[in-house]
Length: 248
Image 1 (cartoon, rainbow, N blue to C red):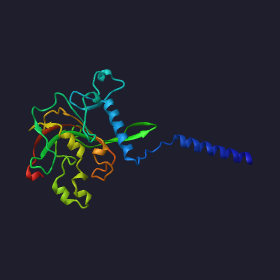
Image 2: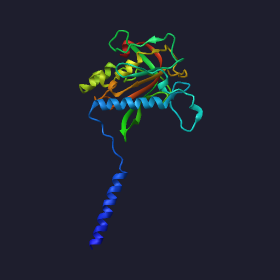
Image 3: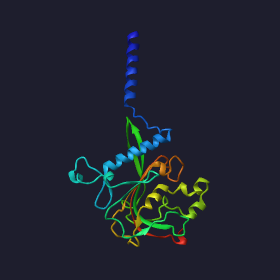
Image 4: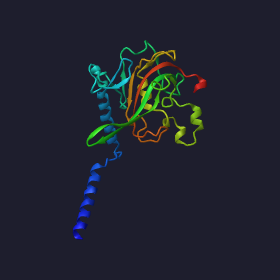
């Protein structure tokens, strides 16, 4: 009887040990904001080393099996510029208007710019596993390029209309910072927009803006539920003009 009990006990311990070995650890958001910022920086650098821009300016991952992209330059080799906020922008050579329209992102300015854009706006979460930091999950908040293929005017993360703020039912939702991504606005000021490009014109993306979480929403609640998320924008401004009064 004792032997049977010992066999059962040993079997149970073995099953428990095997179960623990098979379990996948769930990432726990660090309490220290400096650790979060470090994760973002490491994941962004890894992303820039693993991706390039194709002939239309799309961000593409390097293939480990196809040699066709072997001569492409990494994003990290395309003269990325870093702003004091941590925002990184890459201006793609040969894809800029000449001279184009300057972009005023201050919504209260009399010359505030309305933009019409072809864009991929993706979010990423930087996580650590076994000492390795990378973007482990991602999604899109707007993708006109792989979607309906039509430019979009004033995405909410760039400019939220007054009517939307006025209709909000919470104090947080009545503020622009609940919707607008300051880091994107900051990066966009480094570009000029095209003017009056036809909606059906083939896109030729102007570049990339990478926004670490500290320059996006950080840990604040927001319209998209994207606390601690980095955002990467790949875009072309089809039209940049002073925002009409009836579209404010």
